Amino acid sequence: MSSPPRPGIAFNSAAHLADPFATYATLRARYPVCRVEPDGLCAITRYDDVQFAMRRHDIFSSSGFKPLLQPDWLSEECNRGGFMLAEDPPDHTKHRAIVNKAFVTRVVAELIPLMQQRAGELVEAIQEKTDAGRPVDFVQDFSYPYIGKIIGRITGTEETQTLEEISDWIAHLETIPPTRPDDAYIEELEAVLIKQNDYFRSIIRDRRATPRADLVTALVQAEVDGQKLTDDLLRQSLDLFLGAGFQTTIQTLNHAIMQLARQPGLMHDLRSAPALIPAFLEEVLRFNPPGHCVLRKTMESVTLSGVTLPAGQYVLVVVASANRDPEHFPDPDTFDIARENAKQHMAFGYGIHACIGSNLARLELKIALETILQRFSEVSCPADAELPWIDSFLSRGVTQLPLRFQ
Ligand code: HEM
Image 1 (spheres, rainbow, N blue to C red):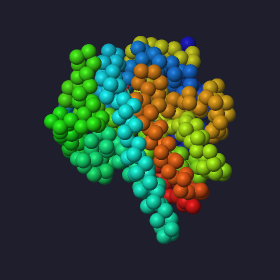
Image 2 (tube, rainbow, N blue to C red):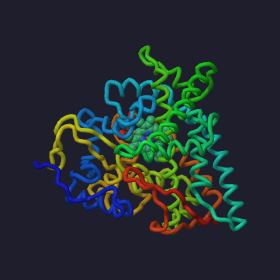
Image 3 (spheres, rainbow, N blue to C red):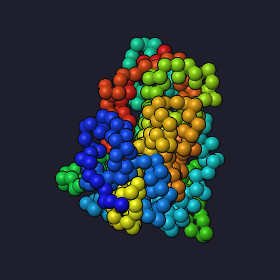
Image 4 (cartoon, rainbow, N blue to C red):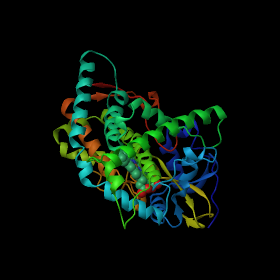
């Protein structure tokens, strides 16, 4: 047993951001539990250790997310709370049971016509651009307006604000710095957060007054053991759904299209056998998950792969690295839609916090892919090095994706 080594790897460096999977391979082989920059955070990179950390929520507390959700320099009104994501049992158990009651299969299934219609409209518009010889940016022309429409419907935000406003809020959330920024930035951020909170509150008031057949109404009404969510927890749950269900699904869709562009024959195979689309998507989630790390904090000292983490340690649990662990996924850097255990990926997490929106996300992705594959038989995109990648080690995706369809 030893304390975590410090191999001098910075997750926020240009080298890591350019090819994080190369860093993960080194860490898994030589420093499976170690300190990395920024902030001397500890990173866990092997599949078995990642799974252990997610299973042992009594040792690895989700309060590790709190510094990100509730920096101490933001005012109380801007506190995003830690609803579910940053909670541990018993609060998490209680809240997840209430949300589960609302987020039932029927709510997801009712969105199918909306998904099909929106995907159809967007593919039509891409066809028109392609025919006119105009460039296509898949982010602006498909993934963003498609996922935006669905998440806007789920959270009720499609009636209160434009997609641009929502993405401005998300862009601000994604750039919340770990240390106190200057006052001008705090003022700007708080204005955006307060405005969004007001929108959430107005949606909740509206559904209380006029119930509908939608998720927000179901959340407002859901009751377990005589307990309902308070107004503040309802506001936090909309914040969580919008924050957790938007970029993740957009980037998975982007990764799926990039994979089709990069692997000759794949698009043809999926067009000939659309029943393979779900297996393809699981392999996309394994190979290129949109979220690379989740955060935890140790509640007691714990030893993993022979290294002892002290109590109170903030930990990066690197799901993207677990997904490429050769001990669990043979030949992990090869994309293989026939991989038998692809579904054991950690892209949706594991254990009590496993993604509650995974079935919704899988359905959104499947319908998008089916619609695109029905229309186009070829796609090409620039090399990785030429694409604008998101500047974050917590998530991976692109801000623009120029494509050529045929
Ligand atoms: C491909 C898309 C998605 C991916 C890869 C993804 C990934 C994840 C992961 C890794 C977690 C676990 C976090 C942890 O253990 O700390 C999680 C939790 C969660 N996700 Fe997703 N997610 C996706 C889509 C969605 C969607 C569409 C929604 C809802 C609209 C959603 C809502 C949530 C919520 C509410 C949680 C918190 C669950 C809890 O703490 O009990 N996600 N997601």
